[in-house]
Length: 260
Image (cartoon, rainbow, N blue to C red):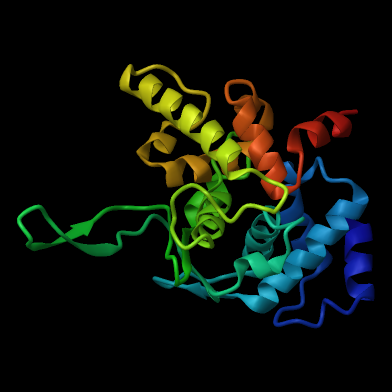
């Protein structure tokens, strides 16, 4: 990725909060095989967007975690990917990423059927608040990015995009050339199919956690779209088409073109 470092420095983007060296840059880029399908021009645009992401958002450590340059780059490259053709403005309205060293146990209060307030604690690898930060486990970030459909950064940032519609319900604000009816038909059909397969204890093409809700289906489908596009497109081609139109990217085609 030497050409990226030269291009990056030539634009003055290196004069940011942290000055990254070429070893850190190469380490972070190479550990993310989902970036291998990007051509030179696209890689440069992603790099630019990742640096602007780091200017715009703070990465805040928790529980004594030390955040290194390599960690910052690893997160920024992945965070930039979904908005590569959308722009950083799609992440406006929130300002921080909180990093835990491992899974964390947030405390949530809710009102039960009897009208009583209860407290719930559940271990999580990531969490996204509609009007607050993104919370991530560094252990899970390290475990992701291996083209297996598991990527906590993509998952939680998909929730952020989803929430821009005013509700986290599996349907982000669609572009003017997209049909809300087509989106709804594609996602409801696929969600229902997945839920039926999960209820029958069948193997599923994507993470069965997607059956939790339409919002989780959208987030899991986003992970699959970028990491294992062929695995998503085979059972749910209409979902793939809708995500291709929304993200304005075609990872399946890029994967084929990148093959030697």
